[in-house]
Length: 436
Image (tube, rainbow, N blue to C red):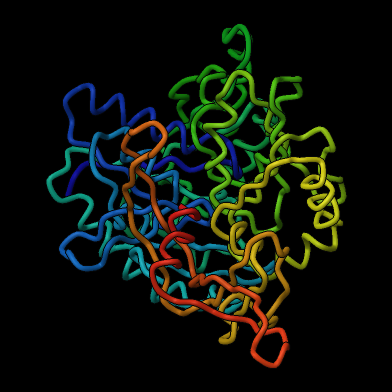
């Protein structure tokens, strides 16, 4: 087995993903064959990865974070880099992806009982990732201090102790209380877990690093752990894809530019980093609109993002009054783009006859496109390529979605009654291509 190290955090969003990616890149530049690994991830930001040995599968899902880390390693993303991916659909339930494929849906309590079976998949993927590698850098999830979940843990110390991987604890000084968070983690961990930690990192430090020398001595006094370094604040890291939707609260430029793009923040928003290219444009202002706030009247473009629960988010879209805002936007000559679930919402209806995404099986769409969507059990997961007609340039993208779309046209039959026509075939491809 390759050598390995695991980064666990004192909490969520402490910067583990970027640190792992950076360490992967540094190891690659030193000539090492390095791979990323995250046993369990909870995120609706997913990417398409290879399923080794399965030429017919088309691809599987992993977290965007591990996809980014694979790029840092200079290797193709593999489903074994993130064997368990949880994609929240409701406040208490999620879709469970195992080694790239849908395993099922589970409520939070049921998932805890399921973890024992999932550890086998985690360890199987762990063995595969280590084959031919010099180094594997593992990312934990949340915090090992969540001792109420320890008995069935597969994401942090549950994995580290089973795989015998040493742990470096990461604390985020930018959010405050970093000494207490590191020392507190030491205090409440059981001895079996505490001995796995070989040291810690302080992340996101602003200013003169020497000012934290006393902090390092204090942490050593409480824990006896070695400090592996204090990582400075890296502003450029904000341009990398974000994994957790908690960052959406601070994703607003606050600067007036030539084009304002409004993005309603859906409750189950998915792959919101698809908007990163727009944010990177110097003359584009991207405004993420939280629930309870109207879509800005001066926006030139509204982008409805992807969703892990299309019907549920469509109903909430109306509750927020965004449907009225959208119609007013269109009357002013504004443009609208829907991505994945957002595209599905723009049609006539969204139907989920099997209750795949929840208890509501049908909802009226926003009516801006003459299409309807029907959810189906089989998920489309694949990389795709296309060509820009106006610019004659190649394009690369991906598809991760449930449901099939087909055009819906209203006409008048011979008796003068209105009739709805649903059409299959080539026309549907045009709509799917638009969704990409």
